[in-house]
Length: 208
Ligand code: VGL
Ligand code: ZN
Image (cartoon, rainbow, N blue to C red; front, side):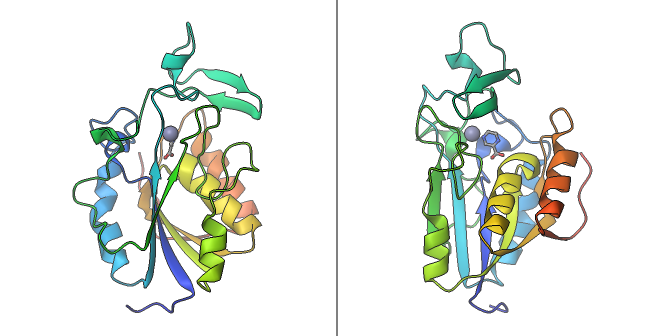
């Protein structure tokens, strides 16, 4: 451990469905695993997040008559991308990548389990009010600085980083340990939004 205990590593959604061959594959998603495992050695505080949807989840195109994956819909909380069914609770797709070290994590935060609300962020669901409890956990442990890695840069990493920054955490996104979906310019939008909220970056982004 080379980092002080006020710094935590937040590992976002490194699950089979976001890796090659998965239901919502992020190109080369699995390439981040060795680097994430290496980073884990530096941190005393380690948190994993796990996208964890019921089969009838409203973010799935399959649950909207006549809709295709990657089309948009309106939810009570605003516009929502419709995704291929992914990370269904208890399935192999929802499991962590087999090479990801998980035994050393202190906490696993599951999110997206309410059928009517999607949850990209590790802190708040997409209605921006329903809390996962993660910030309270980190604060009570004396953590004020978050290093984020995982999938996907432009969705779950982005929303987690922005929510964390808004709540007063120092946030560093390790771009070399993230990969993006990049849907309709979402990667550029994500980078701009993170930057405007004071999120810092480490490492080089790996091109798609
Ligand atoms: C994610 C889309 C839907 C992510 C999760 O982990 O970035 N993206 N659910
Ligand atoms: Zn999801």
